[in-house]
Amino acid sequence: MKKAFKLKTEYMTLGQFLKEVDVISSGGMAKWFLQENTVFVDGEPENRRGRKLYADMMIEIPDVGTFFMEKNTSDEE
Image (cartoon, rainbow, N blue to C red; front, side, top):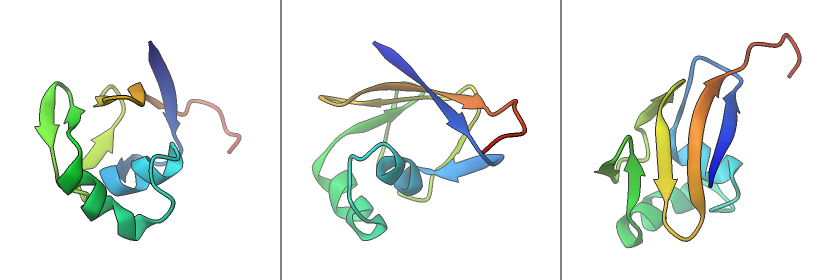
């Protein structure tokens, strides 16, 4: 099942995203997590925690879920 994720800024990094969706508890864990697990960005394996994620991208984390990045269209945060 795909879940929508609303971006509050123009983009966010993969490391920030993993923390936001509670896959990791701190930003420092991103490098370790990506070395041990396969994460797909738009269907391609990705292991760079600094990879920029923009609206309309799809992130798949096996055993966690698939997320579709959406632009935040409201003025609320």
